[in-house]
Image 1 (cartoon, rainbow, N blue to C red):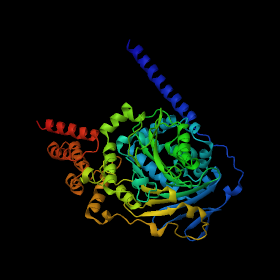
Image 2: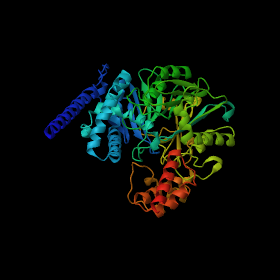
Image 3: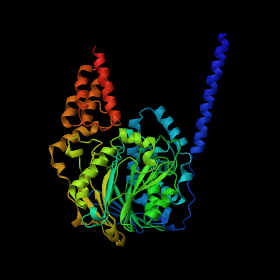
Image 4: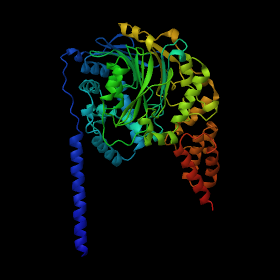
Length: 553
């Protein structure tokens, strides 16, 4: 009998091993991404990088430089593959650096090589149909950029497949919103809500995967063979749009909404935004483009239009789409839906009850009401605001604040004038530098010179000169779960950020993990008195507090 059981078990485990091998082989086959067929006949793709002036790099008419502001500036033109190749050649170091930083962060999140291997196959399976949902134009452009990708990561996948898949990483971050990777805020005013009646759009892009990832920002100016000229804020290897404006005065910014965990990929959000920016001139055209694309996460697109003289929200989930229009001359978007259909889903209603999104929404409304008609300077002031409702001190870095001190960038558009202001480091606290799209696209760069509108620069936030900022810099490295710090000193953490529930939660968790129950209790009790960002975090502290008290009995 025992021999029979052993034989059955051996057969069963043998079957499992065989099944696993077949599954791995299958995933490897279905997840292989074949490069697109290149349709361009332009031989300029073989052109070399030149340096006509110190610090100015060119490939034919395409150029790249670093501004005195610390922002990189890139201009590319032509057919998809042609501009992708030029982009890659000019930004090679940034493309390779960005991938190194991204993979380093993955290794911090998943330190086990075994689980990393499993993750690779899971991502391969998840993104098996990714190429079917990306236009040929963007596949060719991404393939062009991928020519300069490092071969140090070929064990993950070939360069084209990796760069293509990174365009979906933003969406995965949105799906993992409870990790506080994403908490963007945007708003627009026009008519009687703007001092000069023009449309003004402001937003913080609070997508955080580490300070190194946000270090090298590129202000890219595109002159594609088809579609509109446009600008966008990006980073090495990224051809999708996070924030941008085209030469028709149409702007696009994206805000995550609550999503179910996706089961398969579709069109990445940033490439939907890119298509809108490149091919739409007004809100109706933007709606038409959004409606034909299938997405695998929920997202709000704030569309500002000089032609329409207003802004709207295109809210889109894998199942439905809403267009939300304000009743007055301003609109606010945080991280929940407001439309009739998507705003009333159970998922969205639950998110409103448990997240920081509605609090931030109310804070923007409160500041807009208090300041009177909006201006560019007032927009920057709102984007930098760190207080809670009624000006309450809720601690630095609170997800309920408009300025959470994590922003990849802050940006302000004035579409009718084709002007855009972009923040410089750190976060959105540095000066906002201004670009005039009409002037940039009219330039023929032959010397390395500044292209910003110097007289329109907004000064850096005075907060940078305070002791509170210095203390926050000490606190910040401990803030995120994917940056584990074993040198945490509980009393120091709360001293650096004394009004932050998060500081007390970190201190309490440290003591809790070391079974120092008596020390953990007062940290949790004090943290629960502060303005806690989410219901999940409040419940976490309450559970640990109860367990710590019970452990002392």
